[in-house]
Length: 298
Ligand SMILES: [Zn+2]
Image (cartoon, rainbow, N blue to C red; front, side, top):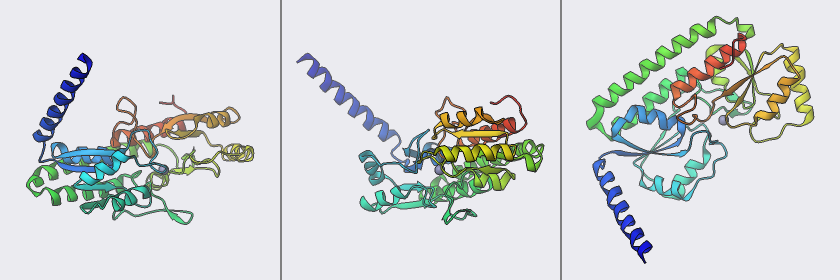
């Protein structure tokens, strides 16, 4: 009986508390983002004027995400749903349609110069500073459209983030430019860095059979080892969503070093090396530079 009463009091307390919290920020725009990189950009650009519910969390794979019942609730309550588009997260359009979502939808990648992988558009467009500037402007524009009363603050936040992007882009360019172009060859397990490669003249090789949702065969591994040897490839990277054991095995049979994780489709935890978009880009490129120049791997 005593336990029950305690529980009841706790429920009342929690519901009053959460109502108070909501009342404090009832003017905030309720934004749903599909994955952690968009969540970070919206937080930077929206400040206190947005209340974000992100669906695919840090260190998680949006390609194969299975929506939860709470995601449908979040979408039903949203004023704005922001997704990458380019067929990265096909499930979110279905989620919106199935729940009769009729408010604003933003495809953050709208207007980027896309790349193809075989017959499909490569969705990983955020792996490029040129592209992320377009994402940033698209997001700011949507926020201003929905909350014009905060236009000045949104514009100011846009300028601050844009300047950080430009500064980081220039600093990283200097580091990459110190490496001859023909030495900029990197093997990754998931074909997610074509945009980064285009921007920084880095050749990323993601061998057949090594993507995140299939198991490479013994012959795939043998072919890759031959390729690493014949092209004198120095750097091998695994992603936060791939199986690192396999690449360790390859590295032990070649001269290549395992360069740690590159973050492609998700940010790290807040305590990890890639807690924000900018930190992710810095960490990835500095890791690549370190591995290619034989420095201590980060
Ligand atoms: Zn991916």
